[in-house]
Length: 118
Length: 112
Image (tube, rainbow over all chains, first blue to last red; front, side):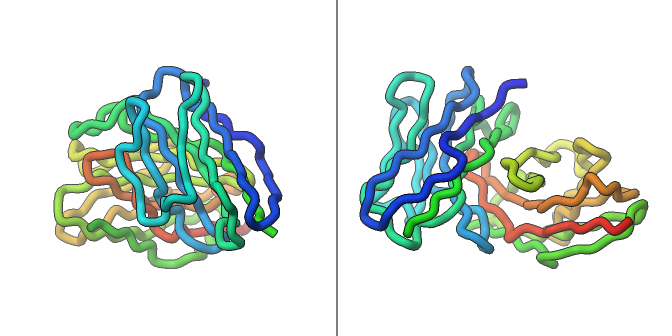
């Protein structure tokens, strides 16, 4: 069964360092997302990406964050200068479509990357 | 803006007993509603979804949920809990796009 894969599963970084979280979405999917879950809190939407551009982003997704689909298969989230409060589980997701009828709109999630900023 | 509230962050059930997880939503337009499950050290897996067709939705692993517009609810049930149902369950809402807004999650413990 096709799945979304994320690497690495765990990442420890020093405050102020740049990190890149990597995701390989399901191959025929067109919409890509990043969510995060700070320990003990809700899963929060960060950004959605379609047709090589951001289609929606939350207020969390400030100038420190960026996303890219560099080669048609990978989807990356970059945090330019990490802060302690960026420590969280980051989930990548993908879906085939985004439609009012709800058909094939199921988002498939990866297993997440646990980012720890020290 | 939409929001989701899950009543009870932890639920403990005996094996074989009914599982009932509560979800209430707030939305200004007809929503799409989802239940996801997260097993330990795994990602989020879709259990079921409501997309304005039948109000009673059946999902995987024997779970089902009923959309009740009058109560703005989408509670998740399973008639008989199994040990393998121990996990965290998330209710989520979407307003036609795919951006999901999640509830706080309910962790289910199944006692033998």
